[in-house]
Image 1 (tube, helix red, strand yellow):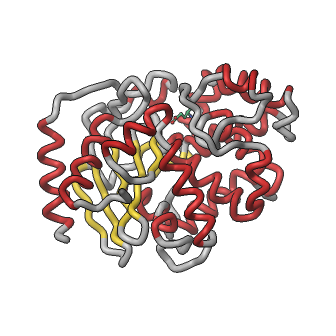
Image 2 (cartoon, rainbow, N blue to C red; image 1 turned 120 degrees about the vertical axis):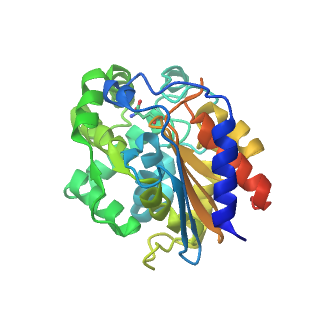
Length: 303
Ligand code: GLU
Protein backbone atom coordinates (compact mmCIF):
# COMPACT_ATOMS: atom_id res chain seq x y z
CA UNK A 1 0.00 0.00 0.00
CA UNK A 2 1.49 3.35 -1.01
CA UNK A 3 0.20 5.52 1.83
CA UNK A 4 2.18 8.57 0.75
CA UNK A 5 0.39 8.75 -2.60
CA UNK A 6 -2.96 7.88 -1.04
CA UNK A 7 -2.66 10.68 1.54
CA UNK A 8 -1.73 13.15 -1.20
CA UNK A 9 -4.79 12.13 -3.23
CA UNK A 10 -7.09 12.33 -0.22
CA UNK A 11 -5.71 15.70 0.80
CA UNK A 12 -6.20 17.19 -2.68
CA UNK A 13 -9.66 15.70 -3.15
CA UNK A 14 -10.87 16.65 0.33
CA UNK A 15 -9.68 20.24 -0.13
CA UNK A 16 -11.96 20.59 -3.18
CA UNK A 17 -15.03 19.76 -1.08
CA UNK A 18 -17.30 22.64 0.02
CA UNK A 19 -16.32 24.12 3.41
CA UNK A 20 -19.03 22.94 5.77
CA UNK A 21 -19.42 23.98 9.39
CA UNK A 22 -17.78 26.32 11.86
CA UNK A 23 -15.19 26.19 14.62
CA UNK A 24 -16.48 25.27 18.10
CA UNK A 25 -18.22 28.19 19.78
CA UNK A 26 -18.79 26.73 23.26
CA UNK A 27 -15.20 27.34 24.44
CA UNK A 28 -14.12 30.94 23.67
CA UNK A 29 -10.43 30.02 23.34
CA UNK A 30 -11.25 27.42 20.64
CA UNK A 31 -13.30 29.87 18.58
CA UNK A 32 -10.06 31.73 17.72
CA UNK A 33 -8.65 28.83 15.66
CA UNK A 34 -8.17 29.28 11.90
CA UNK A 35 -11.04 27.19 10.46
CA UNK A 36 -9.05 26.29 7.33
CA UNK A 37 -6.37 24.22 9.06
CA UNK A 38 -6.26 20.68 7.73
CA UNK A 39 -3.83 17.87 8.47
CA UNK A 40 -3.69 14.09 8.28
CA UNK A 41 -1.17 11.69 9.79
CA UNK A 42 -1.12 7.92 9.37
CA UNK A 43 1.15 5.53 11.28
CA UNK A 44 1.35 1.93 10.13
CA UNK A 45 1.55 -0.94 12.56
CA UNK A 46 5.21 -1.35 11.67
CA UNK A 47 5.80 2.26 12.79
CA UNK A 48 6.10 4.04 9.44
CA UNK A 49 4.84 7.65 9.50
CA UNK A 50 3.06 9.56 6.74
CA UNK A 51 1.82 13.12 7.24
CA UNK A 52 0.36 15.87 5.07
CA UNK A 53 -0.92 19.44 5.47
CA UNK A 54 -0.96 20.89 8.98
CA UNK A 55 -0.25 17.50 10.54
CA UNK A 56 2.62 18.82 12.67
CA UNK A 57 0.69 21.68 14.26
CA UNK A 58 -0.67 21.30 17.78
CA UNK A 59 -4.42 21.53 18.39
CA UNK A 60 -6.79 20.96 21.30
CA UNK A 61 -7.76 17.29 21.34
CA UNK A 62 -10.85 17.89 23.54
CA UNK A 63 -13.08 14.79 23.65
CA UNK A 64 -10.57 12.61 21.83
CA UNK A 65 -8.95 12.48 25.30
CA UNK A 66 -11.97 10.51 26.58
CA UNK A 67 -10.68 7.38 24.84
CA UNK A 68 -7.37 7.79 26.68
CA UNK A 69 -8.85 8.43 30.13
CA UNK A 70 -11.10 5.38 29.88
CA UNK A 71 -8.10 3.32 28.71
CA UNK A 72 -6.16 4.34 31.82
CA UNK A 73 -9.12 3.68 34.15
CA UNK A 74 -9.73 0.30 32.46
CA UNK A 75 -6.06 -0.63 32.91
CA UNK A 76 -6.39 -0.66 36.70
CA UNK A 77 -10.12 -1.06 37.40
CA UNK A 78 -10.91 -3.50 34.59
CA UNK A 79 -14.62 -4.50 34.43
CA UNK A 80 -15.41 -2.46 37.58
CA UNK A 81 -15.49 0.61 35.32
CA UNK A 82 -18.82 -0.58 33.92
CA UNK A 83 -20.49 -0.59 37.34
CA UNK A 84 -20.68 3.20 37.08
CA UNK A 85 -20.77 3.87 33.31
CA UNK A 86 -22.64 1.99 30.56
CA UNK A 87 -21.55 0.74 27.14
CA UNK A 88 -24.55 1.77 25.01
CA UNK A 89 -24.77 4.54 22.42
CA UNK A 90 -26.69 7.49 23.82
CA UNK A 91 -28.48 8.85 20.76
CA UNK A 92 -28.38 12.28 22.46
CA UNK A 93 -26.02 15.24 22.28
CA UNK A 94 -22.65 14.80 24.03
CA UNK A 95 -23.51 17.30 26.75
CA UNK A 96 -27.15 16.33 27.29
CA UNK A 97 -28.61 16.14 30.80
CA UNK A 98 -31.96 14.48 30.10
CA UNK A 99 -30.95 10.80 29.96
CA UNK A 100 -29.17 11.01 33.30
CA UNK A 101 -32.40 11.76 35.13
CA UNK A 102 -34.29 8.69 34.03
CA UNK A 103 -31.23 6.42 34.08
CA UNK A 104 -30.51 7.43 37.68
CA UNK A 105 -27.07 8.91 37.24
CA UNK A 106 -25.43 6.07 35.27
CA UNK A 107 -24.19 7.66 32.01
CA UNK A 108 -24.80 5.65 28.85
CA UNK A 109 -21.11 5.44 27.86
CA UNK A 110 -17.70 6.93 28.72
CA UNK A 111 -17.66 9.24 25.67
CA UNK A 112 -20.59 11.50 26.46
CA UNK A 113 -19.59 14.25 28.88
CA UNK A 114 -21.44 12.67 31.82
CA UNK A 115 -19.58 9.38 31.29
CA UNK A 116 -16.23 11.11 30.89
CA UNK A 117 -16.83 13.00 34.16
CA UNK A 118 -17.40 9.70 35.99
CA UNK A 119 -14.19 8.31 34.44
CA UNK A 120 -12.40 11.53 35.51
CA UNK A 121 -13.69 10.92 39.04
CA UNK A 122 -12.25 7.37 38.97
CA UNK A 123 -8.85 8.74 37.94
CA UNK A 124 -8.95 11.45 40.62
CA UNK A 125 -9.58 8.70 43.19
CA UNK A 126 -6.95 6.30 41.93
CA UNK A 127 -4.05 8.51 40.83
CA UNK A 128 -1.73 10.08 43.39
CA UNK A 129 -1.29 13.36 41.45
CA UNK A 130 -4.13 13.07 38.94
CA UNK A 131 -3.24 15.78 36.42
CA UNK A 132 0.50 15.04 36.52
CA UNK A 133 0.08 11.29 36.44
CA UNK A 134 -2.36 11.45 33.54
CA UNK A 135 0.06 13.68 31.60
CA UNK A 136 2.86 11.19 32.33
CA UNK A 137 0.66 8.38 30.99
CA UNK A 138 0.00 10.36 27.80
CA UNK A 139 3.69 11.12 27.32
CA UNK A 140 4.50 7.44 27.84
CA UNK A 141 1.95 6.04 25.39
CA UNK A 142 2.80 8.62 22.72
CA UNK A 143 6.55 8.39 23.39
CA UNK A 144 6.56 12.19 23.30
CA UNK A 145 7.69 14.37 26.20
CA UNK A 146 6.51 17.69 24.79
CA UNK A 147 2.76 16.99 25.01
CA UNK A 148 1.11 19.35 27.50
CA UNK A 149 -2.12 20.85 28.72
CA UNK A 150 -3.05 24.26 27.31
CA UNK A 151 -3.94 26.22 30.44
CA UNK A 152 -5.63 29.02 28.47
CA UNK A 153 -8.02 26.48 26.99
CA UNK A 154 -8.59 24.77 30.36
CA UNK A 155 -9.33 28.14 32.03
CA UNK A 156 -11.51 29.29 29.15
CA UNK A 157 -13.60 26.15 29.52
CA UNK A 158 -13.72 26.50 33.31
CA UNK A 159 -15.15 30.01 32.95
CA UNK A 160 -17.89 28.90 30.58
CA UNK A 161 -18.41 25.23 31.53
CA UNK A 162 -21.79 25.70 33.21
CA UNK A 163 -23.31 22.67 31.54
CA UNK A 164 -20.44 20.39 32.60
CA UNK A 165 -20.74 21.81 36.13
CA UNK A 166 -24.46 21.00 36.03
CA UNK A 167 -23.74 17.45 34.83
CA UNK A 168 -21.12 16.89 37.50
CA UNK A 169 -23.40 18.16 40.30
CA UNK A 170 -26.26 16.07 38.94
CA UNK A 171 -24.05 12.96 38.92
CA UNK A 172 -22.94 13.77 42.46
CA UNK A 173 -26.59 13.93 43.57
CA UNK A 174 -26.94 10.30 42.41
CA UNK A 175 -23.77 9.32 44.29
CA UNK A 176 -21.85 8.64 41.06
CA UNK A 177 -19.14 11.25 41.74
CA UNK A 178 -17.03 10.43 44.81
CA UNK A 179 -14.70 13.45 44.89
CA UNK A 180 -15.34 17.20 45.06
CA UNK A 181 -17.17 18.44 41.99
CA UNK A 182 -14.56 21.22 41.59
CA UNK A 183 -11.66 18.77 41.57
CA UNK A 184 -13.32 16.47 39.03
CA UNK A 185 -14.21 19.36 36.73
CA UNK A 186 -10.69 20.74 36.99
CA UNK A 187 -9.26 17.36 35.94
CA UNK A 188 -11.79 17.06 33.10
CA UNK A 189 -11.08 20.56 31.73
CA UNK A 190 -7.36 19.78 31.78
CA UNK A 191 -7.71 16.44 29.97
CA UNK A 192 -9.77 18.18 27.27
CA UNK A 193 -7.15 20.93 26.92
CA UNK A 194 -4.37 18.50 25.94
CA UNK A 195 -2.65 19.67 22.77
CA UNK A 196 -1.18 17.33 20.20
CA UNK A 197 -0.24 17.28 16.55
CA UNK A 198 -1.90 14.72 14.26
CA UNK A 199 1.31 12.70 14.47
CA UNK A 200 1.35 12.73 18.27
CA UNK A 201 -2.32 11.82 18.37
CA UNK A 202 -1.82 8.89 15.99
CA UNK A 203 1.09 7.71 18.15
CA UNK A 204 -0.98 7.97 21.37
CA UNK A 205 -3.69 5.81 19.81
CA UNK A 206 -1.21 3.25 18.50
CA UNK A 207 -1.92 0.75 21.32
CA UNK A 208 -5.59 0.52 20.25
CA UNK A 209 -4.40 -0.88 16.90
CA UNK A 210 -1.56 -2.92 18.38
CA UNK A 211 -3.35 -5.24 20.83
CA UNK A 212 -2.57 -3.01 23.80
CA UNK A 213 1.14 -2.37 23.07
CA UNK A 214 2.30 1.24 22.71
CA UNK A 215 4.45 2.56 19.89
CA UNK A 216 7.51 2.02 22.09
CA UNK A 217 6.46 -1.57 22.82
CA UNK A 218 5.05 -1.23 26.33
CA UNK A 219 1.96 -3.30 27.15
CA UNK A 220 -0.68 -1.11 28.79
CA UNK A 221 -3.88 -3.09 28.13
CA UNK A 222 -4.71 -6.70 27.34
CA UNK A 223 -5.73 -7.65 23.82
CA UNK A 224 -9.27 -8.41 25.04
CA UNK A 225 -9.52 -5.04 26.83
CA UNK A 226 -8.49 -3.19 23.68
CA UNK A 227 -11.11 -5.14 21.74
CA UNK A 228 -13.76 -3.81 24.12
CA UNK A 229 -12.60 -0.19 23.94
CA UNK A 230 -12.43 -0.35 20.13
CA UNK A 231 -15.99 -1.70 20.12
CA UNK A 232 -17.06 1.24 22.27
CA UNK A 233 -15.35 3.73 19.97
CA UNK A 234 -17.07 2.09 17.02
CA UNK A 235 -20.54 2.37 18.57
CA UNK A 236 -20.23 5.59 20.61
CA UNK A 237 -17.14 7.53 19.46
CA UNK A 238 -18.85 10.20 17.34
CA UNK A 239 -21.59 11.58 19.56
CA UNK A 240 -24.98 10.88 18.02
CA UNK A 241 -23.35 10.53 14.60
CA UNK A 242 -21.61 7.25 15.48
CA UNK A 243 -23.83 5.27 13.12
CA UNK A 244 -23.07 7.68 10.28
CA UNK A 245 -19.32 7.47 10.90
CA UNK A 246 -19.48 3.68 11.01
CA UNK A 247 -21.51 3.64 7.80
CA UNK A 248 -19.22 6.03 5.93
CA UNK A 249 -15.80 5.15 7.32
CA UNK A 250 -16.06 1.75 9.00
CA UNK A 251 -13.33 2.24 11.60
CA UNK A 252 -13.42 2.68 15.38
CA UNK A 253 -12.42 6.20 16.38
CA UNK A 254 -13.02 9.21 18.57
CA UNK A 255 -13.71 12.84 17.68
CA UNK A 256 -13.41 16.10 19.58
CA UNK A 257 -14.77 19.61 19.20
CA UNK A 258 -11.24 20.92 18.57
CA UNK A 259 -11.73 19.32 15.13
CA UNK A 260 -9.53 16.27 15.72
CA UNK A 261 -10.37 12.66 14.94
CA UNK A 262 -8.30 9.59 15.80
CA UNK A 263 -9.29 6.31 14.11
CA UNK A 264 -7.66 2.94 13.62
CA UNK A 265 -7.70 -0.28 11.71
CA UNK A 266 -6.63 -2.97 14.19
CA UNK A 267 -3.27 -4.57 13.32
CA UNK A 268 -2.89 -2.24 10.33
CA UNK A 269 -2.75 1.50 11.00
CA UNK A 270 -3.71 4.46 13.17
CA UNK A 271 -4.77 7.73 11.56
CA UNK A 272 -5.43 11.21 12.94
CA UNK A 273 -7.05 14.12 11.13
CA UNK A 274 -7.52 17.74 12.12
CA UNK A 275 -9.90 20.27 10.57
CA UNK A 276 -11.65 22.63 13.01
CA UNK A 277 -14.89 23.13 11.05
CA UNK A 278 -17.57 21.12 12.87
CA UNK A 279 -20.87 19.94 11.46
CA UNK A 280 -24.13 20.19 13.43
CA UNK A 281 -23.34 17.07 15.44
CA UNK A 282 -19.98 18.49 16.55
CA UNK A 283 -17.78 16.32 14.32
CA UNK A 284 -15.11 17.57 11.94
CA UNK A 285 -16.79 17.45 8.55
CA UNK A 286 -13.59 17.45 6.49
CA UNK A 287 -11.92 14.93 8.81
CA UNK A 288 -14.83 12.54 8.33
CA UNK A 289 -14.72 12.99 4.55
CA UNK A 290 -10.96 12.39 4.50
CA UNK A 291 -11.36 9.17 6.46
CA UNK A 292 -14.18 8.04 4.21
CA UNK A 293 -11.85 8.57 1.23
CA UNK A 294 -9.10 6.65 3.04
CA UNK A 295 -11.14 3.50 3.65
CA UNK A 296 -12.75 3.72 0.19
CA UNK A 297 -9.42 4.06 -1.62
CA UNK A 298 -7.57 1.44 0.42
CA UNK A 299 -10.48 -0.95 1.00
CA UNK A 300 -9.15 -1.18 4.57
CA UNK A 301 -11.98 -1.10 7.08
CA UNK A 302 -13.16 -3.44 9.82
CA UNK A 303 -16.26 -4.29 7.75
N1 GLU B 1 -14.43 20.06 26.63
C1 GLU B 1 -15.55 19.90 25.77
C2 GLU B 1 -16.85 19.91 26.57
O1 GLU B 1 -16.92 19.32 27.59
C3 GLU B 1 -15.37 18.62 25.03
C4 GLU B 1 -16.46 18.40 24.07
C5 GLU B 1 -16.06 17.56 22.91
O2 GLU B 1 -14.92 17.62 22.41
O3 GLU B 1 -16.91 16.80 22.51
O4 GLU B 1 -17.81 20.54 26.20
